[in-house]
Image: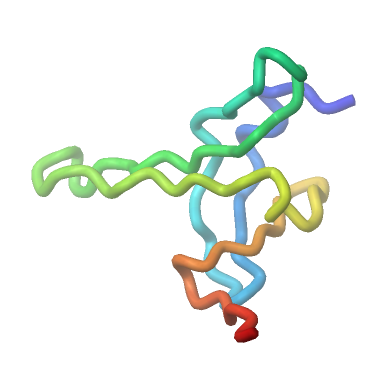
Length: 86
């Protein structure tokens, strides 16, 4: 079992390019099913908020590939994911 507080301190890394996306700020839970729908990586303010705020990154639960001791590996298309072409 994983506590939310333990979940939030892990670095979230995109497997497409190896970049750290940040840390989890929020979790979207479907109240009808009780399942996690997505995680939200906060858009931390730049330079103490002087230059605005980055946008939040929402990662659907299906795009979480592995939860390790220190890192959560995700697939996020906004950071270089290669999309399948039909």
